[in-house]
Amino acid sequence: MKKDSIKAGLIGFGTIGRGVAKLFLNSGSIINSKSGIAVELKKICDLDITTDRGIKLPEGMLTSNINDILNDPEIDIVIELIGGYKPALDFVLRAIQAGKHVVTANKALLSKYWDEIAGAAAKNGVQIMAEASVGGGIPILRGMDKGLAANRIEKIMAILNGTCNYILTKMTFEKMTFDAALKEAQAKGFAEADPTLDIEGFDTMHKITILSTMAFGSRIKEGDIPVEGIKKVDYTDIEYAGEFGYVMKLLAVAEKEGAAASVRVHPALVNKKHLLASVNNEFNAIYLKGDAVGETMFYGRGAGEMPTASAVLSDVIYIARDISHGLEHIEKTVKSGQPVKMQKPGDIISKYYLRFNVVDKTGVLASIAGVLGKNNIGIESVIQKVQKQHFQVPVVIMTYAAKESDMNKSLKKINAMKAVKEKTVVYRVVD
Ligand SMILES: NC(=O)c1ccc[n+]([C@@H]2O[C@H](COP(=O)([O-])OP(=O)(O)OC[C@H]3O[C@@H](n4cnc5c(N)ncnc54)[C@H](OP(=O)(O)O)[C@@H]3O)[C@@H](O)[C@H]2O)c1
Image (cartoon, rainbow, N blue to C red; front, side, top):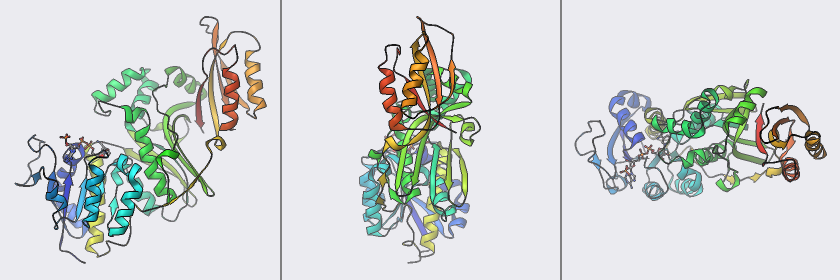
């Protein structure tokens, strides 16, 4: 049914909510002209409606009663920006059941409850859009869904967490310790007071769940994604990586070969010549390969008030456009996907960086090379330092591409050797 104007309700007047309210107030004419219809922010709901947020809102716009949005038949689009699972899931499902379209930036919620939300949206004929949930201001979901619609997406490699990228950049270029870099990220507002979700890789996992589910049109589940964060990254390895011509990045990797997919999150050494290697500080980038387009990369600010609000408003405009054309049931961004077969982690092939701490004795390197060789792993290059600490020396090896199961078998043997004094440090390598 065609309408004369669209009304939106915003839940959550925090960092991003404030940015969205600012855009509605300051960029109304752009929003209306791009939507082809007047779009108005009718209500904002937050638990705290007394704190001054530095914006002058029209009288009566703020409420602490969620029903003022969810039960208002005039509101067509609900913008969820409170974050977390509870009560966000309840609010989103109630909005859908009330026939309202939903825009959310909540990657944790979508990653975990994709099936419930997509199923409810399909049943109720409403649109769910979540451009801001992956890569903040970078238009990756729409770029992939629309701009690359003719492609089969074969591979994604992405830097999706600004906090981790900032920390690794500071460690690499300013030789900062992990703790000092994290403190600086927090002081600059790039990291949360509790940075666990970021540094342990779970925020990146939420985003790659959404991105790969959309890219492959198949449901990728959180439980299928091995996750490793950057907490254990040591400057020593960043320095050796540099000598080999690589930089350390926290990567989300998703691949689909034939029917099987593989999705993972881990720190990796990226060749300095690769496009992703020059993505520094708090910036995000998504490098992907489509069968027709080839390689392409999306780059920009992955978080922050206005970049993220920009993505939220673009969703609102798209939905408003659909409604104004009477096409609201035509196309869904968040839609149900069939489960997909996941590749066995042991079958994944990668080059590896290995750092051993060994007794300074002839024959040790030959024994390590022997174990690797027996398990079909070839050595591409070696760095052996003369520096001795308690008669131990670091030996660093870059391997040729090897199967993960072969690497695991080798490391089990090598770590058990008497001459090997510490657990081997292992990173995957991306050329
Ligand atoms: N910050 C970013 O750069 C960024 C980037 C991309 C995506 N996102 C996503 O955007 C969403 C919002 O993030 P944010 O940084 O804006 O968070 P935020 O600053 O913590 O804002 C959330 C707001 O929601 C309010 N709220 C919490 N529970 C509520 C409830 N039951 N009813 C009404 N209001 C409630 C909070 O109030 P109180 O403060 O009183 O609890 C707070 O004002 C999250 O899903 C986040 O993952 C954020």
